[in-house]
Image 1 (cartoon, helix red, strand yellow):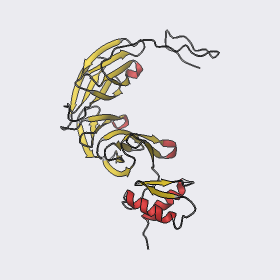
Image 2 (image 1 turned 90 degrees about the vertical axis):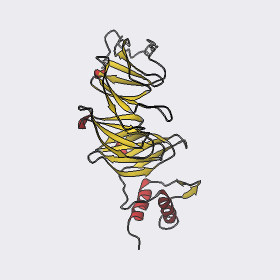
Image 3 (image 1 turned 180 degrees about the horizontal axis):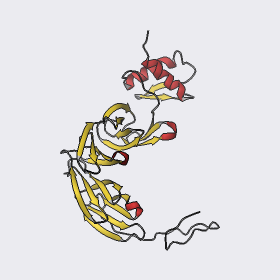
Image 4 (image 1 turned 120 degrees about the vertical axis):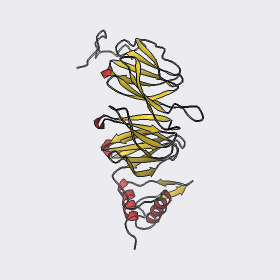
Length: 290
């Protein structure tokens, strides 16, 4: 049965709902993200072209408070009424290189978590089960671990150039690096990079497709989507050029007729009828050759 909020009419099945704009609320220049806090009782709007964070009532959309957090609040996640805000600007503009911790119910900044100069944090990834927060710092290509209770900076590692987005799954943090054009896999227990996989140019987001053990990236600079299979790992380090050369070799040999492959402008094109042939190639490639 559909649930409705107080004051809202119940939906009817015999007609389309009466959809309309219910309110317009000014929240500052360049609202880039909306974040739900306090179990949906509060909605937080970040004004990336301004210095403010606007807290709205989750039921009425009335402005509860406007909080000055500094230049360019870019991304936020919430735990209860606390919101962790990544303060990001692109070089050469000045950046405060910090995560602001804001109590939206009280309407004030609780603390400022300072990061190293030129960090330029772009995304914060929550790990509530570990009481951790990961700051993805596009300025210096690092990920910084932050305690959600202590608000203290912990370990930090290099993950690639221009980390843009991250998603956790089964103890691994997958990160799309927009400038080095790859996906980094970070083991959360050791906070170490276990793998970096080349993808298309300018990956902006990475999404874990859990049902099929895959990570998808949308690549802005070459208008493509890359699919990374998480079930296959080679036994030795290989480069993209080695993969292309070996796939071409096997497509003209043992796998001839099973798929067609060609190299076009440095990209590998294939119409393989199944993924099994592809991963068979990688397994053969990673095995000792006689």
